[in-house]
Amino acid sequence: MRRRVVAVFALLLVVSLASPAVATTPPGSLLQTNVEPSFGAPLTQSMRQLVVVIADDSAPLALREFFPEGAYQQMKTGAIPYPASDYKGRLVAFFRLDVAAYHAKLFGAQNATFLRVDANAHVAQWIPIGGCENKIGYWHVPGVRLVFQRGHQVVSVAVASLISWRGVWYVVHLGPNPRPTNAGTLNNYRVGPGTPGPAGGC
Image (cartoon, rainbow, N blue to C red; front, side, top):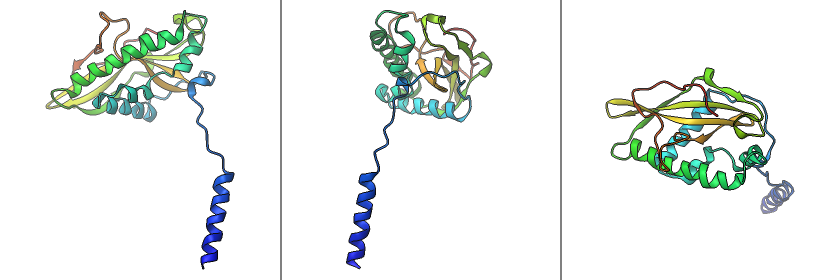
């Protein structure tokens, strides 16, 4: 019996050594596609994950739902100066401030319960090459709404802009863009579910 156990262990060891680890390629290093992302379960799951990290006030974790840096550099290199600095110094910096602002409003004094995502697929549009200072086209949808129950009220807030990379929606602006001040800013907070959109923007 002992020999059989040793033999099985040796076989498993050989198999594990022979099986290479699966490497995950960062999506931002891959080429763009023109596939329009889903407005169904994948979007709901992504926005649910965003709400979870907003509730924890964890901007580093929220960056998982944020547009990949490599993709941004592909889109902007040659179109704007210093795209890497713009990504970190403007987009990510505002995103971190916005996560804190959304947390304070929705989960500060009284926790909100996430109910659903409201999105209007009819306002999504393909931004072509050259549009909005980009060298690569992408899908864009503005004003996707996150709807919550807070106490006896339904409240909602918008995600300013989602854009696509390889058929997946990513947040590129949580709060409004442009914004009145360089501070964390809620986008279109409303009592009630509000209305997704309007169309337009980049």
